[in-house]
Image 1 (cartoon, one colour):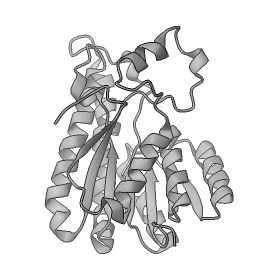
Image 2 (image 1 turned 60 degrees about the horizontal axis):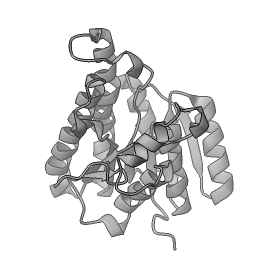
Image 3 (image 1 turned 90 degrees about the vertical axis):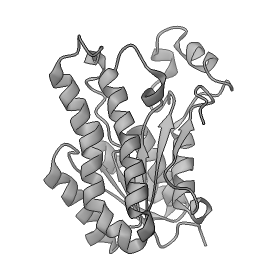
Length: 253
């Protein structure tokens, strides 16, 4: 028996990390709903993963900035599969990152959009998923970022939103831990994802790996493996933690 067989997960936010997480969970026997604003890509990923693993994976569109849409997302998982054991809150709006400068220069509309999707959106996912996670004594994992710690000269909105995610996670772990729900957050470093390394600026990857303690390029599968671990019985005594997955580029207690 696979370690997540007979379990159901919602991955809220696709992209490279979300889709890799869906694949890893399905490989462990978990049925999964993949939600993303880009439905075509999510459906293609879900179909390919389901075919490759033999486990049911479905996809649906949702908007993390809209409360009603997030509510429908969670309810779709419950209605289709009959239960909800795990949630990976992964969505973020990176389309405005190039306009996220410093606290003086950034247009407040960029700040508001970043906080709306990256932080408020996680609150919405939490609010709608929690009654089901309490029922299943399940777990939630939030995708944070090393940006919450490193103090970048730019992307101040993004760093603030990810710091808020860590605070949300600790609240959830404390508030619903007595009811059997575990909550953790991941702080990935640079993840190559679906990008072609050759299209990045010359010397960029060398700069990234030079800042790490091991010269390993971060891949979505590295993040997905930790999500699967935290959802499994092997992670049953881990809660309230921010786990860095960054090749050692950050080191903290």
